[in-house]
Length: 155
Image (cartoon, rainbow, N blue to C red):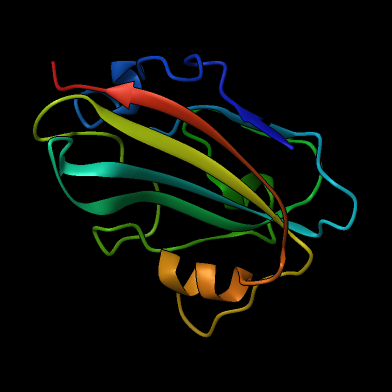
């Protein structure tokens, strides 16, 4: 399984457009080479360097999309996943909201990991889930995982 973005190279700098200093829209994401047995995909964007890469305290969750179909897929810049894939949902980011929050690191260069998990099931929740709840539901159900990383520093 592969995840990529045409907007920045793996390990490269994320353009300002996709941050809170810019338009604060999600970058384009492509997920391909899905494994057999996958039924759904979970997409997560997280910053493990919060708040300071020299004094790590937590991983900040920027975006969660789950129940994407397990087919090669493309989310264009700023896309609403639900419009493109009606059976998918978004989870809670670490602002307690649903949807994408772009990078805005308080200090230093932070890493932003876009991770895709292929699961052998569809996830069901009574209420909008956090990443912890997503991970709990994925336990033992992941058939493949891929990640793509971008960096950002306040300008």
